[in-house]
Amino acid sequence: MPAIKVLVVTAAIATTLWATTAPSSSAKSGPTRGSSAQVLLAKFEATAAAAKEAEAALHEQMAQDIARAERERAFAYRKLNLLRAVIDAVALAKDEESAATAGISTLRAELGWEKGNETCDLTRFSPVVRAIFLSVTTPAAEGDPATNVTRSFADFEVWYMETFKRPFWALFDREIEEMPVVER
Image 1 (cartoon, rainbow, N blue to C red):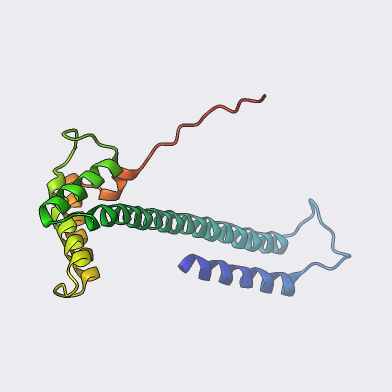
Image 2 (tube, rainbow, N blue to C red; image 1 turned 180 degrees about the vertical axis):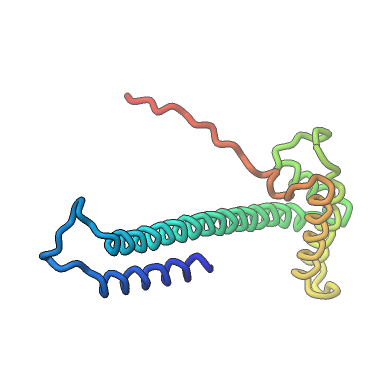
């Protein structure tokens, strides 16, 4: 946030300079400016330029912060929606093996992939499905069920990032086709 401090300090300097050197209403403007007027104007120009630069830097930083927050929000909702679907599928399973099948099938469906058409090894998602299965079917599961699911999901995300050099949640990015507006 140094840009904010620069902007505030720059505005304070400009206000101070203006208050102490404001021309009177009888002052003449135009081509007969003396060197002291040129110095004064140069100070104001420098102050204005510094304020402009500080504002531009602040806008750039804010744009980056907003983009990062938007991406984090999108990923959080993608995770929520995927987990909701996987939990619903796994909760119906009779055993761990059918839970694994249901969980992987749900993941594949959420990604829009057909069986055998995956771009990565979806069995790496099995520990997440297992943690979900244990948390929804075992009343006294070891440890905190949410922690176990979160940990296994984090491990999966790290594996995916290391393997493919991009976040897992980027798989859910969908290009929205622009459709021409047709008037009736």
